[in-house]
Image (cartoon, rainbow, N blue to C red):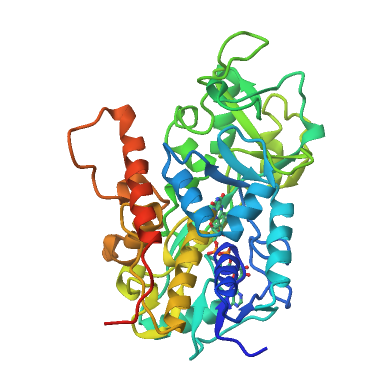
Length: 443
Ligand SMILES: Cc1cc2nc3c(=O)[nH]c(=O)nc-3n(C[C@H](O)[C@H](O)[C@H](O)COP(=O)(O)OP(=O)(O)OC[C@H]3O[C@@H](n4cnc5c(N)ncnc54)[C@H](O)[C@@H]3O)c2cc1C
């Protein structure tokens, strides 16, 4: 098939970008190395849009949460990722969590069967000279990463990201655990394993003493992404840290005691069948044998069988504020756009969102037209603006979407509880105005 644009990488961003371009009438060659003899250290299948760790797209609350607002904007733009997520949703309170296999299968089938998309299972090692979107993610193949470094004159930036374990439901002792959501928000969607003070202190001590994966010398100065900190790193920061983080017991009435537990471990459903459950916030770099030994000391998980254990990976991204223009084009080689986590956004949703933007800019450009970027008051615009200029290039680090990326509210000072709604109301108005703007010929 002759193509108008090549996309390299069929993850969350590349699949979304391919879909958007194909729907806009462009012919796409989507190059994905998995399924062609290559694999990344975190993926486990050949499916497009595989979610490598948690199965959550986080809050779906478009009124009070910036990522919920981003979901809403993406749905308005015909997002394939959001459509597949909505179709394969599993219960998770106010969060949007999905059956990861069904979700990725849905995306793969939609992309592979689109008449304007040719999926080629191939690794790309060099920067093409034709219109291209690079969406190779945090685990970009090393030859391509070197080609990007040679072109831009600077090596990739990096941080560590960790994976949480998944447990078989029938190995969890429900005589000890119970189903509930914190503060009874949403349904009783989480499995809760209660710990008393002694059990919690012993658990923290076991984490501190547990054998961890050693870093190589050159990795030692690489930071962690704060939103995905391994539990043993949190435990090192102080005995109470986990109890104020993923193990906080507040708002969870244990029906057997009528009280909140001293600490808790929560598990969230990971597949539609409800046979697999994800340990929430339990990213870890403990050695595999140690994970089994230490996690089986958690009440209710004494006989836990693990479908997957945790792990840690070095994630790469480029210095986008320095290297990209405001349409995600590489300044030094503008036939190349970047999308997804490699741009320095963080998370499944944000990666797919940047895939939408790269595709829309590319589609408009292919028609010889231009369109303004979404306003910075919107979730999409705030994310784009941060990546392509709002962030300080010297200290650039991956970022989830949040209200802090938007301009401050104007007008009379609002009560704290009302501020989020004011941000999302303003964003919806700005997004509506932007949607009405037509692409035009460049001035
Ligand atoms: C260990 C780890 C844990 C994470 N945990 C979470 C989490 O819990 N929640 C969350 O929201 N995000 C998490 N992330 C971030 C997550 O990777 C991204 O949010 C998301 O997958 C990025 O989407 P993407 O499309 O940019 O990259 P990916 O989804 O990784 O897709 C990139 C694709 O490019 C392909 N590729 C790479 N190089 C080449 C090449 N040279 N040629 C052809 N194909 C290539 C890869 O095979 C892959 O399919 C985690 C990341 C890692 C590494």
